[in-house]
Image (cartoon, rainbow, N blue to C red; front, side, top):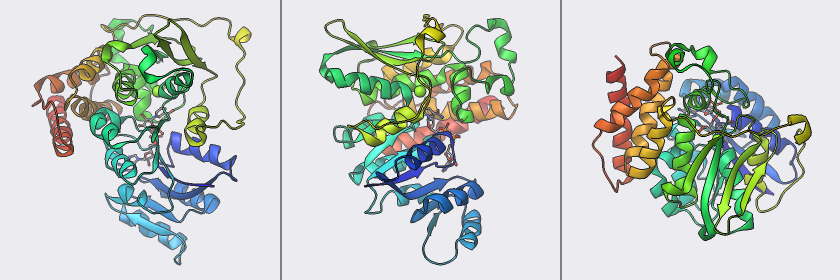
Length: 380
Ligand code: NAD
Ligand code: MG
């Protein structure tokens, strides 16, 4: 029996994780759940999974939850350190980090420092501070939940890290891959939120439309698998059936495939090195008919080029790119800027920032705060 904490249990990955756990009740016990603001959904999850701890940022919402669960059975943590605090409890074995954004970084570091397994969906923490996070982690202490990285990790079960020639990360291309380039600047948030193959939270859905998600995933792969940027290729694969591939030094290319369903990589991260039965839609290749591949267009989707640039330059580039993007995506969702301004503002901010080659955590957090302010200024 493993005890797990889910950071961001009310989000898309969080809910999928609870579905996986619901079907593996004899293997996992949920000891902690967290949400930013959706306290009512969190309360339903508490009723079903009976964790010992919950974390809620807002102390007023914490009070509401307290009234719903009086007594001492449920310990409610609030405030801006609650994510870091909830992972520290001794009984915790695995932390699933399914929060969105930079807010996941301190809890990821705390999890690793406590020697607990980190099932990582929150790619932003590696994008910001991959060199710090990976240097603290032991082998296989971080298990990827992101479908592409899980595919690479699964493909790597047939070879060693040192035998990798390159990895090929697949991208659906998002809703606008074939959209006329001159009309891209006028697409609405509602259009951008319609992802062709995956159901996800708002921020990552917009990142998928700009291809910033792939940019972040290049940086994530570089850190997770200790790769040189030249070893990371991206290919557009609209059907999202091949989740990514590893080319080994002997020319063999090993891929992981399946219908797009995040429960597969989530469960693999939880049960690794074992596999457990999971009820998913089976892959029927003859009904799919064809799998297609295209070279990514970095002129039309400049975010991808920025991702390669940030991966190559390292240092504070990842944190700056990520923070600028978080602000720009929110501004787009709020109707303040055009779709094409997301990448253009990120580019301006990363190219103006005070670059530090070997940043400590404080430098990273300073770069993050600076980039948020600078992006807001640039969007005014
Ligand atoms: P989501 O928006 O659906 O859920 C986010 C969760 O984080 C919610 O529970 C929310 O309450 C919590 N949260 C948000 N802001 C917070 C804050 N300031 N403090 C504390 N908690 C906060 O997002 P999602 O789609 O589930 O994505 C979560 C992470 O997983 C992201 O990093 C994303 O890139 C990654 N990811 C998601 C998918 C997917 O299919 N959804 C796939 C791969 C990777
Ligand atoms: Mg992904």
